[in-house]
Structure formats: C-alpha cells, structure tokens
Image (cartoon, rainbow, N blue to C red):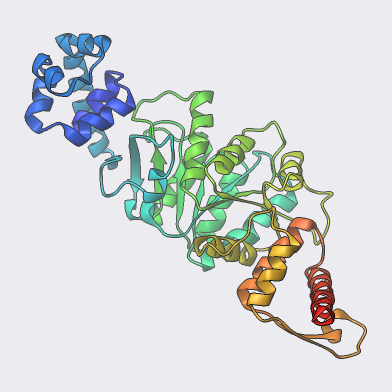
Amino acid sequence: MIRKLLILKYLGVHGSLIDVLAKNFTEDEFIKLFNGETLELQFKYNIFKDDELDIFSNSNIVSKAGKFADNLIENSKKQNIHIISYYDEEYPTILKELDKRPLIIYAKGNIELLKASKLVACVGTRDPSFLAVNSVKNLVEGLVENGTVIVSGLAKGIDTEAHKACLHHHGKTIAVLAHGLDTIYPSENKKLANEILDNDGVLLSEYPLNTKITKRNFVARNRIVSGMSQGVIIFEAHENSGTMHTARYAFTQGKKLFCPLFTDGDKKNLSSGVLNLVESNSAYLVKDSFEIINILNAKNRNQVKEHTINNQEIMNSMKSKEVIASDKNKKSLTQDISLEIDIELYDELKMLAHQKDINVNDLISFLITEYRERKEGEERDE
C-alpha cells in the first residue's frame, strides 16, 4: 500500500480521493488505474474529475511517480527510516484524531514509542532565560519519572533543553522535524539526534528524504508536535513567535496547554506570549510536573472542569463528595477547619485556584463559608 500512496501523493491527488481509493480499490483496480485504464473504474465508482483522469492517462507522469516511490522506499530502507501510512497499524493513534493529519509519516528509531500512552510536548523560545531553562529541567525530570514521553522539535533553545533533560534522566523522547530525516537542523544538534536514537527515541517527520528546509514546513511541523501530545508546555515565548503557532494548534486540537510559573506567585518573569495564554484562560499556570500529570489524568477520566467552571458547579460537586467540616475555633484556615475532601475534587479546586490566581486554601475557605450559609438558609426555610 505504501508504494501506491506515494505514487498518488506524487501525482498530487487530493487526500479525500486517496482515502476512497485506499479503502475501496482492489490490487487489480490499482494496476488498471496506474496503467491509465480509467474508463471502467470511472463507470463503476464515478469518483474522478476530468483533471484527475488526465493525470492518470499520462503514462510519463505516472511512470515518474512510480520511480519516485521506488527510489524513496529503497533509500529510506538504507537509512533505517520507516515509512508509515495512516492505514498502517504503526501509525500513531493520537495523530489519527487530527483533522489535518499527515497521510504518511517517516520515522527513525523506536517506532513503538509512537503509540505511547503518555506524551507531553515541551516548546518555547530559541533564546531562553536562565529561569526557563531551569524550569525545563525540573518539569521534564518529574514527567520522565512518571513515564511520560517528551515530544519537541529539536530546535535551538527550549526544544534542545527538553530533549537533553529527558535523556539526562533516562527518558524517551520524540523529535519532530520539518524536513527529511536525512537532514538534521540545526546542524549542531546532530549529536543530540544520535543520542535520541541511541536511547530508544524517535526522529519523526511528515516529509520524505531530500525535502528542502523552508519556513512554511516549520510552521506546519508544529501541528505535529502538538498533535503527538496530550498536553503542551509553553515554557517561554513572545506573542509573535513561532512557538505561538504550536500553542494555537494545540488549542484548536483540544490539547491542554500549560505554562510554568518560574517563581512562586510571581508573574513578572512571564514572557508576553505566555502571559497572553494565561490571562486569556487558554492555559493552566502550573508550578510543577505533579500538577500537569494530575490535570492530564483527570482529563483522561473526564473529571477536569473547563476554565469556565463556576462556584455553583464546585458547590454541587462538594455536596456529592460529602465534604465534612467542623469549627476548631483557631485562627488559620488549616487550623480552623478539619476538612475531608475527595482527592480528585481537591485537584479540581487546586486547578481553579491557579486559574483565578488565588490561594487554594482561600478558595476552599470561601466555598465552605458559602456552603454553610446555604445550608443554614435551607434549614431556616424548612
């Protein structure tokens, strides 16, 4: 099937038609198609436009497409590059969920990693601050300890730091490239690329060998970085940077966005792009990997609320979880209240506190007060 798909892509056949052909054509029908015998096929399926019929009737073009496919398959095999189509079992399940998923991907290394259950992307500026680099090291360490695969783009800066931190802690990482796997860009990351492969990682691309490096491909590559991940961490980025393309892709793909808070409770060190994401409630502001893991786990169990969660929803949830509170006549919140809360509910409250930029204990105190007042009101009504 790979050879057929490569020929169809070379010929410029639209993806929707390729899907129809792949799912319905027999081997004999493909032979007829590539031999220009389209009359019978058109009569049976009525799926070809006039320009498509012209393409398949041009034996020279079809012959060139066949040679291209054969050479690509042979050269990829020589370089240990796997050519994986959307219809192959090895194709990442997480990528199949995308609207603009690539028909064919090229992978080098441990392709079993493409089906990993825990994947988080780490992206950001090519010129990171000391605080950002330190944050990468800390968060990646915690994610790796949790068995999470780190996804990034092998670019300078945050990408490089994320891959290195992952390898340093004996983790697995996927580098998504914006060109053929016969090239490493930037060139200074050739050693890093080899280390990724030596440690059971993967180099991944939607582009075949000999694809030239273009700015357009880097932008398109970012949708694969986010698409291969359950959540994306934006460590540091200016609002007009390429990293924000990844953030926008992640948002439209329904991925969770995370932005680390470098210093406790202090937003002054956040870059403009990160600040916009946080203030628009597009991203979770997090302090450690534990929060990221909890949010992603809650998402998988459909237990995490959206950013628009309101107090009424939490109050109802608290009632369903049977929150137990009793006065202890002490000053501080932790001393004043003996509280038992379901751990999953507490994670939700903690996330909401971060979104609203308030202390989680203050939020709990407010909700308990509201709960008591409402309870007392109900008792008076009775």
